[in-house]
Image (cartoon, rainbow, N blue to C red; front, side, top):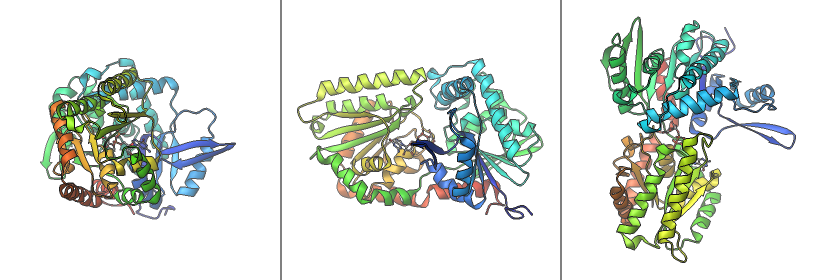
Length: 480
Ligand code: GDG
């Protein structure tokens, strides 16, 4: 009997980045779990199962990773293992194939795609490095769960290496339609790579259907055995593959409680202090062309043009968190945002009122929650998004039940939130302007009713529920 107890399985989670923040305080190195929802949700399960998380720790020649990981394991109850990647590999596998090919293609933005063979070959090679790290660590008792588009081929490499235990995969971003997916020169390799997993999770039913459409068109030997509410079951040679959809969520209780704290209430008060009598419309996004920020600026401009009553009474507070700034596309986007915000502000500003308050940096957690809590309206308009956690966090933090969510119909989050958010098409400037006007004028009772229903759904369907559902349905047995 091993130390984890007979019949009980260990969970191995694999993601491109390890979910930790490593920093140096004077001479002392520190390591903390990251603040993302995934790590918060998985930490208790990982701890109970003495799990292992495998990923790239980020570059940093002088960082004493071994000692830090050892300390982390002792303090947090689950292990970390780093996969090293050279700078050249990071450029071709991560910035190149992952972020300049798969990311735009899977978000329906073919015009942003570049198709480069060198990047593709490096993607395959780095996926093999990940598989080697997993194979070296895994025993036949382990459950292996691989995450996201950077690691689609890791499962296939694992199978080639003789790792036979069930492999699960979750795709955090959308899966495109066959029409788009066919454009990928390596479509066969990618779809076959996905079919080497035994359990595949998507964010929405649409993603799952797109995937099944691609598989059955591109791999004629695949047979659909059954379509159930939760799953499509596929036969692929001797193997059975289950594809399901599981909308990721947030730690609702944690957000709601933190948003009620005195610290957040004070920060929220300061934010509104200089905006007396004005309503705030909030946008918070990573710098990314999928998030539809320039389109949002145009929608907001149209609202000011079409509804002059909004002038001086409303400001768009747009926070853009720097991201992937080495990818040229992202540098161009940054310039577009600077110019568009500048132009709109030059057009409409008046003494004592600036229409777009535009911040290019990340906020600490207190500030993030204060922004959520105090903004009467959130304008979240991605062109396409796997889920969009900002929309969920905004609602969880709306402790005064006084807030309105305007949400893109192309975010995965719209599936469940669509009936109580105001849904918009981010390409429809007029529609966005009308939604801002409607949200601005929405009676207090309606705002409260919509927010209560949104919160009730999030409370039930939080990230802990997501983890349990995924692991429970995918592995059915074995986890403590
Ligand atoms: C991918 C998929 C899917 C944002 N600004 C600040 C900050 N954030 C945090 C938010 C939120 C996270 O970043 C962003 O999550 P999203 O879900 O909106 O977007 P992606 O990063 O694109 O994530 C997405 C997700 O995976 C999960 O499956 O929903 O569709 O693209 O948690 O809170 N955090 C802090 N300061 C900020 O300024 N501290």
